[in-house]
Image (cartoon, rainbow, N blue to C red; front, side, top):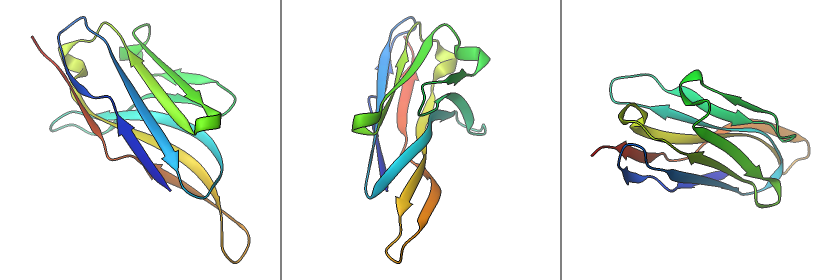
Length: 123
């Protein structure tokens, strides 16, 4: 399973960006998908998550500014980021809980990470 993230970049305070993350491979199903971020010298923290049923969860610092969504047919999760602040600057990572079929039968449930995409909010 591979997760390919895209959409990061440099944006001025108050601006917007949209991140995308597409999962590929021998996927049977995907449960929760999410976005995390890690600023220099800090731990990786949850930004937002979404279940396969569409239930969402947000960090307090992004509520009202960020929106997470997913396209189950495309195995893709999105993060729309509005009203960006300098403190949103970080490397953003996508994560997915994925069920795959095993060659000898049975299923495996694993947590997979994308490669990270840098978001810089600066004037």
